[in-house]
Length: 140
Image (cartoon, rainbow, N blue to C red; front, side, top):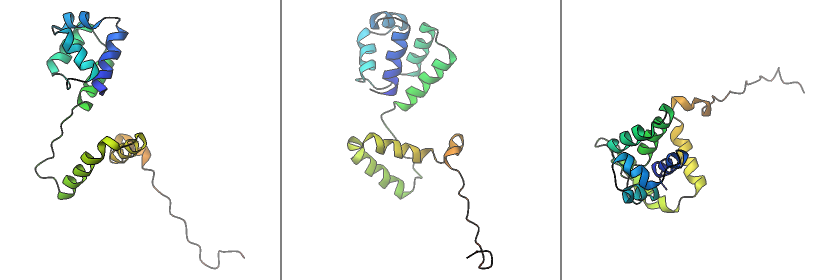
């Protein structure tokens, strides 16, 4: 289940409405809502998200999470034209191994990707260098 699918199910159940009722509120078919929730359809358009936000009068925090889930649920990825060759090889390896990655491997890859994020600086604690002692300082 994609992050958007999970978010949609959570919002709908939190607000206590059925798929058919949500479909009526946002102006889409119930089958489309169902397909979104089970992940048969890719993430919807921004227009759908806007209608959903307005129909449920969701909070700004819920709206932000919904948009983050939408971005996280994109299934296609495009490598920039000016990407280095090793980036292409990395994505080839990832594409081949993605179906077999364990939860731990995914978590490690995500942790590595967060290393450059200024919001995650606490991960990168500087290492302290040990002070060298000269032979006179060492008590024997």
